[in-house]
Length: 174
Image (cartoon, rainbow, N blue to C red; front, side, top):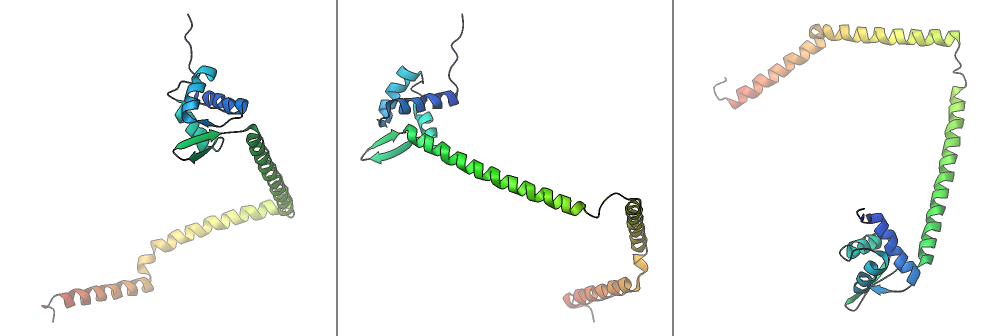
């Protein structure tokens, strides 16, 4: 005994598109709801949802005439859409290849003068040592920052401002 497995959403979409492509006709929703379960095995409960997803993706066209909605999709439209998408992808591919080539040329150009030599290695080591010494000196300066006359003067000015501000708020300061 094997269980009958239901169709996936993508399979239902593909089968719905087959209905349009095979008949090359225009349908109302009620017509599709009758045809889809019989011919393609799509449950009538999911026909509206699938049809709406196809309309949202631009695979099926729709138009309202009077009080009725009509749906259609022709194979030529799908072919033109695929060709247009292929053209876009090919142009993006060509553009990406041009960027890649330009970047490779830039890399090759920037490598000139950066060959690994003994002198260059020594300069890189010296640069690293100087950067480390700079960080040590910065840390030492920060340690003695409290004794800096400019910093002390700035702190005194801030205190004077705070005292003046607090005295102006209190009428008792005089």
